[in-house]
Length: 115
Length: 116
Image 1 (cartoon, rainbow over the protein chains, first blue to last red):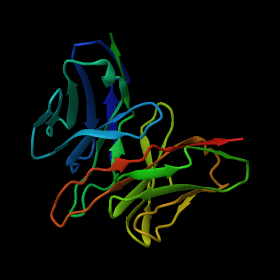
Image 2 (cartoon, each protein chain N blue to C red):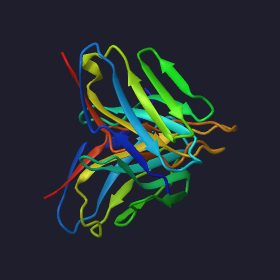
Image 3 (tube, each protein chain N blue to C red):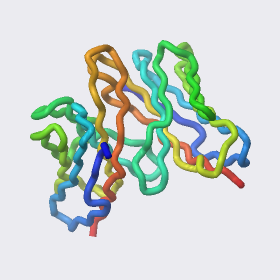
Image 4 (cartoon, helix red, strand yellow):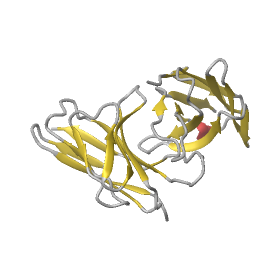
């Protein structure tokens, strides 16, 4: 089955600096890669996702890059703000005519923004 | 507002008891999922259902059971056979399109289960 590894497990950055979280996956058939943000006591919230037919996607201060050959993808957050502090999860799955089904998650990165 | 509602937020179980966690969605999604989250670990899939009256085991189904009698509801029962049930349980749902498309999974705010 799919295995997703996520690094680092914790990350502290100064407010205004950039943060990068990296994930690798093992199943070459995986073609959908979402990123989730989880705040304390809440469920994960989708912040950005990417399909395997594109190499990069941006949404304001957030971007995700995908390298299919190396089987890794990364989350980039620029101009970090205190409200970016949370746990971030990457995930991978095979898309289908139904839609993405079994997501395999990384173990999470606790991001702390230092004011 | 459309969304996923999990109840209760906190649940306590005595040894040997079964408990049922509720998950309701009004997003008109076909697929629903249950995950377990432990500290320092990612989310692990317990069961999922793509359509009413059908469901499949995930990676850690032992000690759990589900039903899918209605499209909007997917309750999870944690049975006495689950030896380490203390965890944060998350329910999710996703939509469906007629074409080859990717439908994100949307999550509820979870139920925290503890053993007395």
